[in-house]
Image (cartoon, rainbow, N blue to C red; front, top):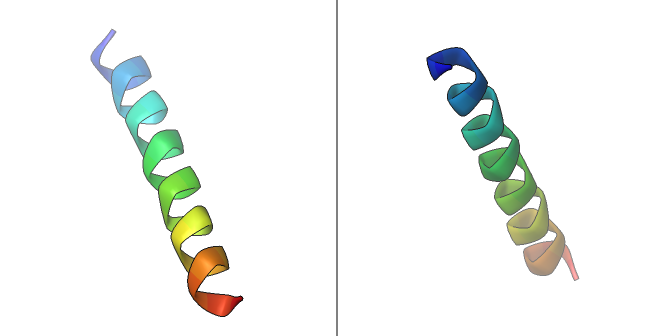
Length: 26
């Protein structure tokens, strides 16, 4: 349960970082 939550949270964080860098790059 906890591990699944962490994986999900890390996925959201990665998506946010990707969107942020993408926004800054353009």
